[in-house]
Length: 286
Image (cartoon, rainbow, N blue to C red; front, side, top):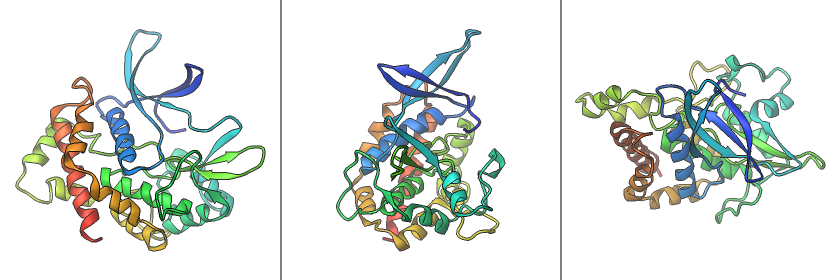
């Protein structure tokens, strides 16, 4: 699925997926950092490691590797498949449909409401009781890191093939976050600009998710609006409380773990500015 070069391989008896990074982007470090921030919040998430792969021509490609999180006898069923089960008219196939206007908050909520269990091998915090409550945490993560790619192939259920039992999958695929697709020159101009609409505070306000408030709307919701709308029918306070305890020093330490060869100075400053501003936006209306 998707447009990036990728392949499965065996590592220490486990299956791992290699995903290449688009040239000139920071998708690889964005994936690694998003997983680290999900861990801070206590969310179930896919694990990512920075990786390099040399192809047959000798060209080295940067990317990430992630361990398969579906146990033996289980399969991953993505959101587009689940929504098409409920609505035969849903445009489930084809890359051009990823931003479909039928990918609404209500449609996703309904898909998670029927006989779906919590993520496997994960202990929820107090007051988090349903898959919808957990998905609220995924949307809070999106709002915090500025993830604009929660489309219908970037959430899923883990399904027991023999018995048909379904469980919410861990959150995965956060490469379109933390300003990862910008060049350093653009990051620097935004950080130094006197125009508030161009600076980080304006930049995060303009971010768009891949979730719509209602079918047929012209634009998807912002990540923050999607989180707030979701929380009208889910328990989200535990995630807000956890975000409130995250300190700037913890964020800086995690960003500092990324090697200089993979993440530039302006990218670090810009990512931390996004996180600080979005945390403030999320918590101010608590």
